[in-house]
Length: 79
Image 1 (tube, rainbow, N blue to C red):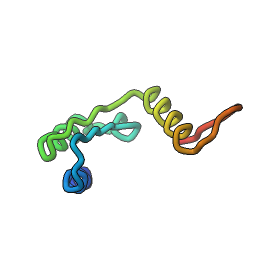
Image 2 (cartoon, rainbow, N blue to C red):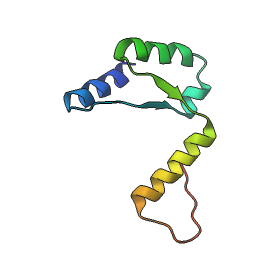
Image 3 (cartoon, rainbow, N blue to C red):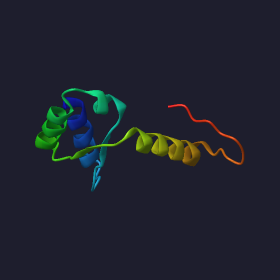
């Protein structure tokens, strides 16, 4: 929670208007995920959306395509 709060504070100091927070595999598996999500929301006002594994994989793949400038053939992305 402290790490997320520090990042949010830095982002806001830089003028960021909106912050999106996404929880992935570690948070899906955490037995205390509801408590963590609630604590982040209480401390920062940020709602953490815990996404399914398929969404995480899709976003990782799209991010790799967008930022690495690859494509035009067979491609495997490992996250």
